[in-house]
Length: 189
Figure 1 (cartoon, rainbow, N blue to C red):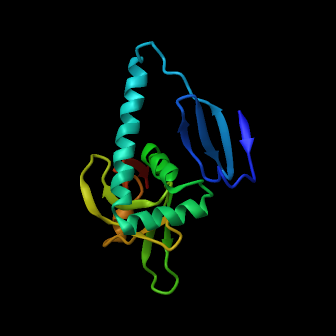
Figure 2: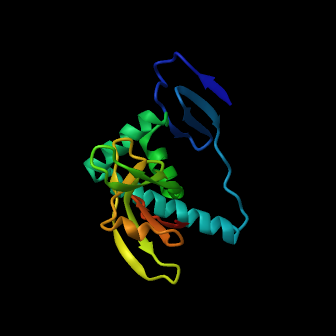
């Protein structure tokens, strides 16, 4: 493997040359390496599954690139998260589910309104967050969408009846992201 720097003839080069050499780009460096040899073995079941996941991830990347608004959001996230290119961020987002980290009750000092704040971490950002307040037997007392704060990680929900936040009831948080993951987590109040 040879590192190539300062040569304008190969600046930005990538791909195979003559079936024997490959130009690859790692960050700002261009690498010249031997072309990989194709295996003669049949792929394992796990390899086939992984290839299918990457195929679907690339379909998702194509849909994102066809949506200028969503592509712009991924480009902004690429810069914030120091990714090499937007395609790798989109693929990473496809493979990573959002995480529901915590929730807490707070009172708005100016309006005295009771709010639920949910911390959600996602590679890009969550698409939607819905909260359900339930009794221990599963009866839904109230349900509704939360509103994303400017930091794109805190989501706020104001219950219509704060009395439903009684001790022993459950708060179920449901998060969807842009690749289509659905994650649910329950908290005991």
